[in-house]
Structures are given as structure tokens and as C-alpha cells.
Length: 410
Image (spheres, rainbow, N blue to C red):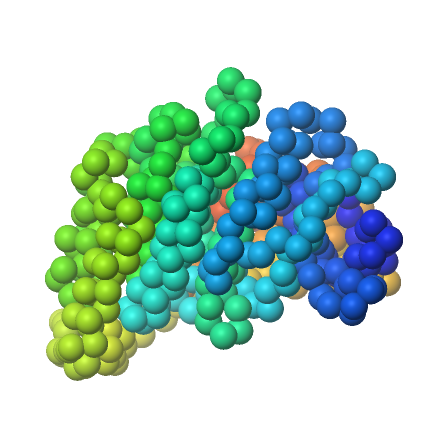
């Protein structure tokens, strides 16, 4: 299901006017309600997957769960149903970006802002907790931030409520490796609200440090670290933070659920103490690169002298064309003026999707993310899992469709 959906009307009422995002089994569109002219977000399951009973149950479950959750920090559902074998969910349109966008483009967040976002996520999860609902897929991509800086949790497709029947006996990997709790990685059935709060803590860690607490070359590597390795000291990465932040992270990211915050309310209370600690010390002298700098409200203060940054580019192997990588977020794809698609890295080959992949620059660290392209993205010959970021190093070979490029960072 692709751009040919633009202009279609679902259920005789919701006209699709733009594509907002595409996932592995559904696409989200911006839709206009032709009855009242309101703008909504409309999620459509890929029609080729409509015969997959497990995915269909997941899609319908998301709609059912959202109908019973009413909270300012959870995206509200308006309607759901089926039209000509297309299963859809109509939700409030959120004018803003997902949290991952800000994390990639803003770098390490000011402490109070990060604590505020984490608190709002926990407040939304408190409503879910009271309804017996476990989200099971909390990650920055599923957290929207509107123009008023309000958090909205979305994508309850993996959620499970008190009365939800478990979907099949298959070993489906639930959640995303960077944010998944040890017990959920081991057995998704055992996940409860403490698992969701573990994921919120990993998101908070990444907001503060510009890196998740555990990293690795593969999802398996990362999961093993979640299960076995000690939690890194956030205060070593951010010396401007109150020392109590380390104790908070140690408890929130404990390996055993019984050692963590038991409820969202407990999590929120601990966050409030950290916020008060930061606010009580509006100016703190910290050591940055061996020199004194003043941090204001948990900020970094003066930055150390910058070192010359390396320049990144991709070389198209077949032609030798050199394409400099400029910007924090670059789309790799194929230009289509008719559809108004002009990717930053244009590869003129029909095997390359119009929006094939993302290349990101996060403070000199480059990553690639496949956008569920038909002809896949490969890194050093390995097919990438859609929407999973992989770190790039100098000399890596990327393949978009049939076009191979070499990544250089020198």
C-alpha cells in the first residue's frame, strides 16, 4: 500500500490527503473528515497482510484498548472499522514530531525538559495501569510531542489488557531491543506495568545522554546486556545532573521487576524529587573537559573547545559520484517531481524506493534506517530490519535496491 492511497476516501467519510508515516504492517495518513472538515490521523493496515490472523488481531486489539483509555497523554481514538478489506483506525491528529526526532536533532536534553517528558509518559501509563493495560512497546518512536510540548503515547498494537487473549504461541520478539525489559525479552507474557516503566527509564536515559543505556551490534547483543550488565552511570555521562539521578536509574532499570518502582505513581514521585533537586540548584559549577563551566537548571553551560569534525559522504561505487552528507536527517530515495518527492540523497534507479532509507547524523555519529523499502537496504551484505537504526563506520558498504555506495567518515 503506497502513495496511490492519497486522495482515496475511507468509509465514504475520511479523505486521505497525505502520508505521515509507514511501518512494517500499517501506514498512517493525514485524513480530512469531509462531514465536518476536521483533520485526523488514519492508520490503515497493509491490505496484503489482512489475511494474517495474528496481525489483524493485533490491529483490532489496539483499537479496542484505545477506546477504553481516556487520558491527555494517550492518543484518542475516534473510530475504527473495515472498508473494502482495509482495516483502519481513526485517531486525533497530533501536530508535532515523535520524541526520537528531538533526541536526534537536539542532542542531550536539558534535565528539566527530559524529566518533564518522562513524567508525562508515566502519567499516561498510570491511566493504562488502572485499566490493567500494559503497553509493551514504549520507545521514542511511539511517543509524540505536540506543539505545546505535551506528550501523547501512541501505538498500542502490542498492548495487552486484563481480558486480552494471548496471540498465538509463536516466539514473536515484542518491543524494541534498546528499550525492552529483561523479563519481556525473555517472556513477553510476564510483562506488567514495571516493564513499561523500565522502558520509560531507558528513554529518559537516552534523552539525557544521547545514547541508550545498552548498545550492541545486534538486537541479541543488546538484550543480553539488558539481562546481565550493570546500568551505566548517567552522572558520569552528565556531570551536571544531581547525584540522586544515578540511584533513580539503578532502581528504575533493576534486572528484577520486584526491585523497581512498583507503579507509575511511585515512578512519578521519584521524578518529582529529581525535578525539585535540579530547581533547587539553578546554578551548579561542573567540570567539562577539565575546565569550570556554569550549568543553569541542569543545562551544560559553556561547551568545551570544539575539535575539528570529520566530514561524511557516500560514494556511488558504480559511478564514483561523491555525495556529501549534510544535515541531521537525510532521506535516501528516488526523486519524483510529480509526487513532490525530493530526497536529500537522490539515487536515480527504479530499484530504489522514493523514500528508501534514512541517514542520520547525531553529533558526528552516523546511522542508517531502512524505511520498509520494497527492495530492502543492506549494510555490508546484511539485510536491515525495517525501522531499526544501525551505526555506520568508515568504509561500510550500503546497498539501496541495486545501488551500492561506500560510506566514508574522514
